[in-house]
Amino acid sequence: PKHIQEFYQYLLDEGLSGNTVKHYHANIRKALQYAMKTDIILSNPADKVDLPKIEEYKPKFYTSDEVKTLLNEVIGTKLEIPVMIDCFYGFRRSEVIGLKWSAIDFENDVFYINHTVTTPRIDGKLKIVAKDRAKTKSSLRALPLDAGIKKRLLEIKAQQEAYQKKFKRSYSKEWAGYVMVDELGGLILPNYITSAFKHLLKKNELRVIRYHDLRHTCASLLLNKGKTNGVTLKDIQV
Image (tube, rainbow, N blue to C red; front, side, top):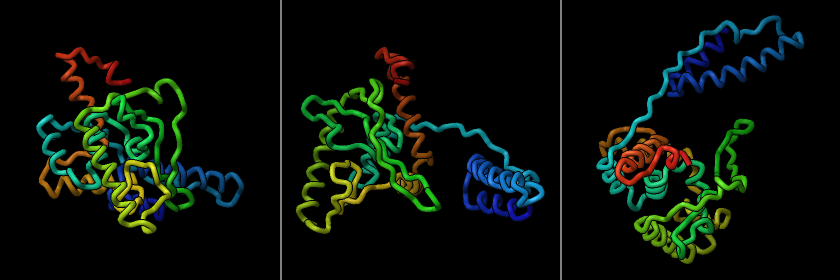
């Protein structure tokens, strides 16, 4: 129990939440429970440790003025697309990373959420999992492409094509067709967005929120706009 307790405290000191530590505990306890069942150990030490209390997280929201300031700060950085898309559409992080140029119809000004990229740890190693979403009516719904975002996306697309010509063989083809790639074609990973977003806010002395809170911000701004434009909570949830 002493070793497990010290491990949980180490995780907390490293900045992990109480909720995450409880997920660790569930796996550790299950493994040790099996060991006890098969007579490898006499009792389960995980049953004798104190778990951290979970504090309910209250999402934070940016005002429209704060969103404008944030968007100005991310122009030309790797965070520009994920921040821009999340502020306007409230995408999940995996949906932003999974956005492909083929899902954007520039002629008809619509685009689709039909692909995701996640980075789970499997056997202790980070693995990139890219997959298409189930082809249901809701997952393949068309979203309107904002004129300002369309203009910027076309500029970014042209820049990517220029990088391909400039770096030639050095440019990675593994993630060809993805919107979220760097100068050499490498995929910009979810964890980078989370850490870089926090660093950007502190560097520019902006109010610190989680990247996921931009999703809440989008919903909040849409709800406020709906008071005059007839947008309902049900519309936002869809």
